[in-house]
Image 1 (cartoon, rainbow, N blue to C red):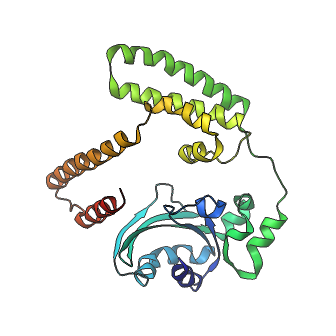
Image 2: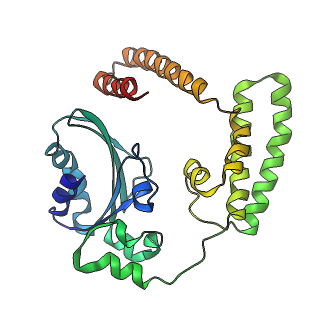
Length: 268
């Protein structure tokens, strides 16, 4: 981490960075990856993105995966990077945000503690954080809550026929809609907050009893059964993806699968 930050801080237009994710909010553990966010001058934003593979190759020449996130756009990009470092396969989530995007919405920093700052030019992040007015967490609007409640009972009705037909995949789809609607209600009950990723929200924003209750949407979730199903899903996916690659003439990423399976074998 220190090596990558030093390399990135030296790049043209890189102004500041902070720890996001569990490291940033202090809930990280031995299994956590790193999610640094870098603030980049607009004029250098795309130049840095183009140079990222070469920058990370200076840390390790063995880059297994360089995966752009689906939400990448003109002012933000994220890359999930698998890098072999000292014999380990490490996940590094690289995030970059333009300076203008931060200036337009400084409240991106509202939940960032000062201890999460990795570096900053002229104290820019500290000044922004200290200058922010305290705002209550955004809670779902009445319209959003009403929509969620109606959606829940709509799919509760629809799921009756799915259950009677024993239509497993449609039941799973209905349960996903029910869970999503329920999460909106729980967000409101919790007084708002960071609920953009439901799995993280349930982990951090609910008590033990609520966590247990929400398992009704997942059939109980026996960990050993989930582990066995996870291994089976990898085997099935590999089989089907290889068939498709053969059919389409695409190259199958043998090294990516081999490294991830090695990681699984070592730690599961």
